[in-house]
Length: 170
View 1 (spheres, rainbow, N blue to C red):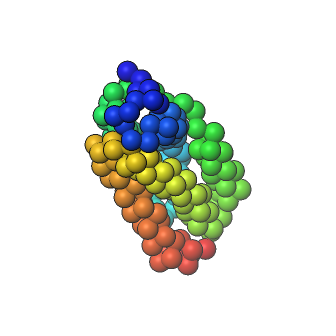
View 2 (view 1 turned 90 degrees about the vertical axis):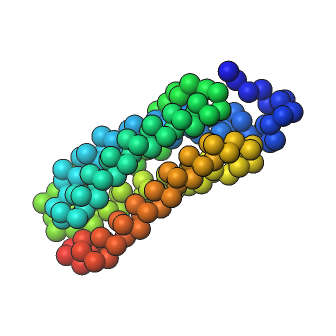
View 3 (view 1 turned 120 degrees about the vertical axis):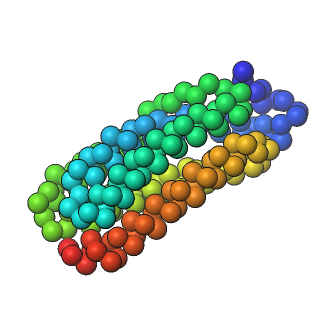
């Protein structure tokens, strides 16, 4: 079921196609990220960082399921598209792993790569929450806000590990 832009019952209907496109993009991004997080966890030296990557992997799986609920809440079947931004961020993470493998700064470099990903996700989910709010998609807004809050928490955790352990050790 596609909600038409001229549907008078939905406020700010002009945002609908953008909202759906961004949902497809972030669903693709989250799926791509699962592989990247596994690689980062495998390469991390610091146990707290390994644990953070592993925990975020599980959280990302939950976020994918939550995105499927968002699609359902607006009457659509969940479909992902390849996220070019995430592909680029993960490619950069791969380069960092190769460049700093065996180096004292590897964990600090992994955190930098991971925080770039988190900031991309925070920006995307922030926009999606705004669109859902403006279109009065309340269930979608609540689901997306939950994920946005998780992404922000992950960013804080990575900063704490960087400041207390990884950057100091490097």
